[in-house]
Image (cartoon, rainbow, N blue to C red; front, side, top):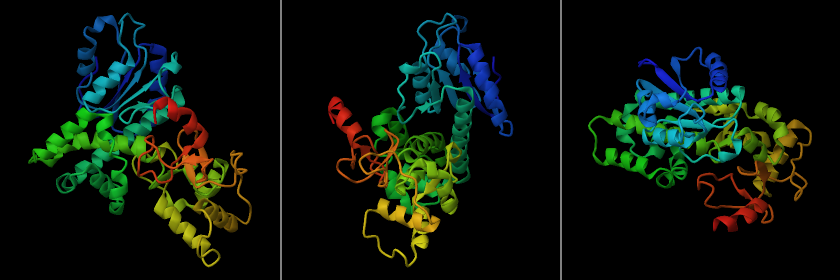
Length: 368
């Protein structure tokens, strides 16, 4: 039985002792310097009612739950990770799920309020550590800036302030417009707190931390707009991700260091554009081509060599500007290459487009 603690806690759930031990063993060193407990639960029929047993293990300050998909091997029939996910979401606790033996049962794309944990010890542990620290950092920032919850009631306004980019509020708001579809109950709870004009603004903190953490991790960092991943930066410069290290050197001053940034290298788009403008100087005063072509030309001039081509056969791998978050490839504005917008991409993701072949294949099946 885990003892209630005032420290943060991560609850790891798996009925396979070997898998659980391996994942915890890989995670513990990564969090050795963090003030967090790693609690474990191997569900069995001896635990009684599964939901009661789960909720009993949330005592203290559980910041993150991680669960395997199949939890039935120790005699507890009918308990699956989807139940843990639902219970965690109802409690507004971030939850990640994975599957080792039934990899095909989990869709690759999680919903907005779900985290998909890589199914290996090393990658899974790195992901869990990054998620814990990201949600912790947002919660800590809100606790240190309680006035934000009193003065800036919309999640987008709060997020823009936390990221120190208040001018991006309207764009970030476009990532948050679908919250109701993702978790209508959660939004109703948040709206009720706001409408009740609570005297203690810190009452908003748990729900706001939960919402903003998922928006950053599962939307803003995934669908390039104000922030670009290393792959999206390569696409923005119409080149291959193989140039990521070279581009990192050029755009180091534009690095994003906010919540969840340890997942990989991320860059502020406004910082990237400022650097490109400096690099262009008087050589290329006004772009007379697509911005992908222009960015590629500016970077090539700076490096004194041609950039690597990517894998697109339509343009020979020399065009780009946009990133398809579904096929994970650079795309350009050509009609035979990508679709400019769809219900799959947040409106704020100005540098994300859906690759044409992928869209044409799936759109009719989904009625889009």
